[in-house]
Length: 218
Image (tube, rainbow, N blue to C red):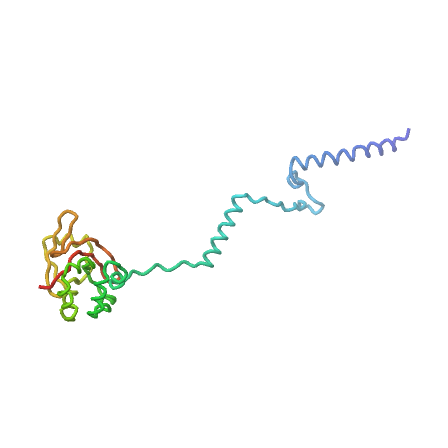
């Protein structure tokens, strides 16, 4: 019997088996360096980079962030709208067309559009219609009288509703020099004979309170 041939056959059988066992060990235990294997140079063999799978939620968040950035670039934020002047508030009200016309006629539109702080008690169209036509025409024909009447509706400084009610029983002096008494009765506030129907229309140069009666200078 040839012993050398028998040993060669045994080696041929064992060699494939060892390869299978080694392959199984790598699958169970991870890459060769994890099991202490090293290359001929003494360094652990290189590990091929893995290809991580993106989480669906992460992908959606990235897409949303990209869309937001693009939107901000295409549609920049608009600057905050500046508050209107007293003249602009009056001009934008459908209930103050007569007051607007008289303010323009008296040459006060520029004043109510300029810098400063005023509190304006603005009579509605219905308030002006309480005055008979003859008297109203007379006022329109006298520019100085018209100006005095309009200034009777303005007080220097910004007096919001919360401050006006604290003046209950006291008098306020208007720009025409005429004084009117403030009266508070529950939620009702009156300035002279005029009732405040809307308050705190805030402007860049003061505040507007709407009243139901035209104030006349004394």
